[in-house]
Amino acid sequence: MTDDGFMGPPWQMDWTLKAQAARDALPEDVRKMIDAARAELVTATDPYFRGVEADRDLPSGMKVAPVQSSKPKGARVLLFDGGHGWMTYTFVRRTEDPQIVVEEVFWQ
Image (cartoon, rainbow, N blue to C red):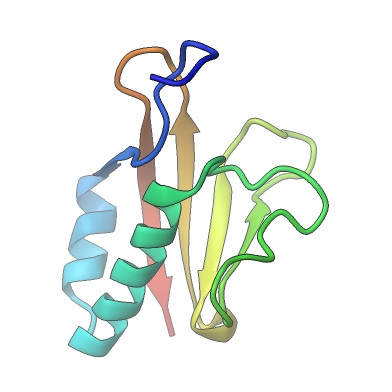
């Protein structure tokens, strides 16, 4: 736990069955990119990447943005492979067992 009472990284991550099946169906090189994106999310101080240029520390080709700008605590999209793929996720920050839930994986 951190000083403010919340657990910190690394965060737990769960996948919906649909997202896991979509990931598993992709070629191995794409799954490796998704695994790299996953590693960035679970180790981020704030998986919502709030603030101006908060995602500037992400590797080249990755970017995080809100799915809807009107919902600042809503779902996020992590773009990878220069925007050819994405993962949508939500972050449930609670005192015990905070986690990231991946809801969708897509790559083209």
